[in-house]
Length: 511
Ligand code: KIV
Ligand code: ZN
Image (cartoon, rainbow, N blue to C red; front, side):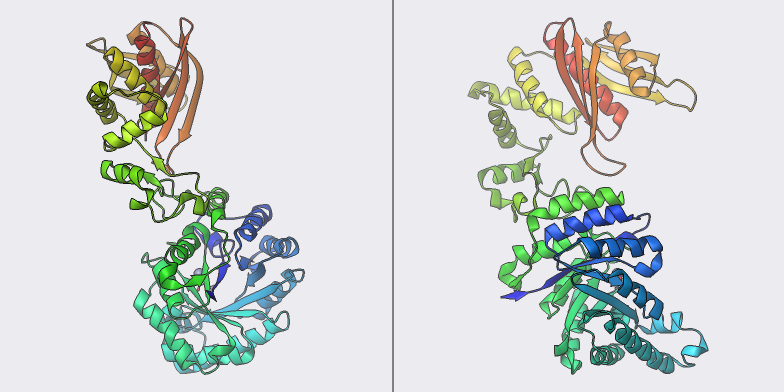
């Protein structure tokens, strides 16, 4: 059985994502979780970059047992010494050193004549620096990985030459990074294949792939590398990292696992830990996960359209290639919207324990569509109300037409709400402590009574600043308590919808 090693660089390359910074405590917490996930190597940081990162690597090396703990350096003696010192207490330590190998990197970074006057001279100096770095790293640990930075754009013949030299110097893992995300899968796969054919001493080291996502190809390139003989894959959780990020480890590993028939390659990853790890990383980095993100996005196991819901409910595998439980996801979900279709709606009604007699079903479904056209998502509470309303054939007494909110620093917000209320179009304005308070006061003026707000809860259903906000209100009037719910990307609108939803329920109960 073929196995590949998983090298996680969330704490080093992932942390290089714009706006992200992790302290020692956060790094240690994530390192514990990465160990639970079962990664083979944790790249804990770049010790020379700051005393705090040195401390973080040292703390992880001291406390995390199981994975190899790795630290990054340039091909600079002081960097390598910082790695060696920070890793002293690791049970298994690796130093990851390296240098730029593409012509662009060599001529761009080594402009000074001290590196040589011509590109050829500068390349020779690059090899000398690489070999010297490996030898220095070997003084601290046997396990030395070398990154041939920007290998994706390098002259392949120079790449083969430098790889041969560093393996002779004692490198055990050769990293072939596509630093700028320039590679395409077939070319990158061929490069990995050619390294095995053209570097005479390659059997003394394993090849590692490290791909960036500038063209959205990081995962595809990594898999092409694995297909062509790489035996270590580097990446980050949620694909975070410099610019467009690194290859997302959860995607690579689930591709290998789901398409085992094709790759026939194993890892030792506990995939059930993906969901938890992903949420922890998102929270620590302050980088939310897009809902449609493969494997761990909120919608990754949600079904909504009629055809899909119908098929999924009959046989899960019609629209799911993985089980949510395999990645630690709570469960597959059917999101009820206007596109869900009868089967999905009736299935949920039955799950809620409600009896849907055949003669009601067309009306119920019509009523569902009317409500669903006005709302983004239909909740269980709505279904209960739909069922009750339909049985009583009760029209909604309150419908939101529009609202305007005016908020200004230092002034009380003012909100104007226009409702259809008992067949009339009515508009009222009110000021309040906040825009939601003002809106609820305006609505109370329209309906002629003020339900007591017992509880107000807001929750982001999806991620990001355009997240769908779900508001739930518990309101009471004349000792009758109801729950109202509303969803919108605008939280004031979601709040108004929730309040109106509650009011309609009160009205439906004869208030
Ligand atoms: O992308 C890259 O080349 C890197 C190296 C430092 C390994 O992150
Ligand atoms: Zn990188």
